[in-house]
Image (cartoon, rainbow, N blue to C red):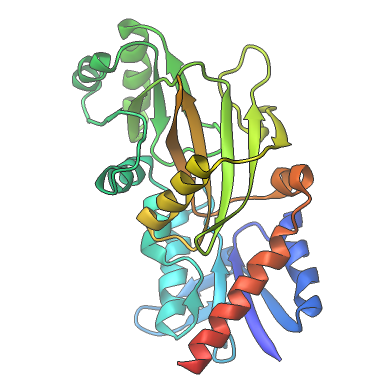
Length: 294
C-alpha cells in the first residue's frame, strides 16, 4: 500500500484529520508527523520523539510550515528531502512564499501585478521613501499571516511611529501602497497548475483586513479567466505545487497580494463544498506514482 507523509507543527487542526480520513478512501496510508517532536541531524537523518524516522517507503510528503519556528521546520523538510522523501512543495519555494518581500520580488520578475512595495532598515529613511506611494499605506511584517502584523497608516507621522516601534523590537517589515477600496479580497486555491475554486472575502465593518481569521465573510464566487490566470501564474512564479493566492481589487484591476505556501482550507471548503483534502492526496499519489515510474 502506498504511504504518504504530512509534516506540521499543528497536528491538532481539523484539516489533518481530513487528510488522515481521506487516505483509506484512496487506498493510501497517511503518516502525520509532528514537527515539534522532530529533529534533523546534519549530516544524517531525522528523528521523531528521539527515534530515527524511517521514510524509505514514503516517496512524497506534504510540508506545512506555519508561523511556529518556520526556519526550523524548513530544515526538517530539507533533511527529509536528502533522505529521498520528496516534498510536495520544495523548501525554497516555501521560504519565498513565507516572506512578503521575496514574494513580491518573484512576482515582479515574472511580470505579475502586485502592490508597489518599499523596504528598508532605518525607520525614518523607510518612512520617507514609502511616502512616495501615497497615503494610506500598509505596513506588514515580512512573515505576517492571517492579518496579524498588518497595520494601515494614514499619514507620515503615523507611519514613522509604527516603523520606529517595530524597528525597536527587531521586526522586519515592508511598506505597500494601500489598494482601494480595501476590505475585499479573493482567495484562489491552486493545485498543480489548476485553480480548485475561488472564494470572496469581505471584511467586517470598520476593518480593512478581509481575512476569515479577522472575522471576514467568506463565500464561493465564480472566477473569470483573468483571475484564474493570475493565480496560476503566481503559483508558478514561486514554484509552488499547492498554494493559496490572495488577489486584491485595486480600482478596476486585480493585484496579487500574497501567495500562501501553506494554505488552510476550512473556510474555503465550507463555502465551496470542495473536498480539498482528497484532491491534495490524489495529486500526491499521482506524483508518487510518476516518481516510481522514473
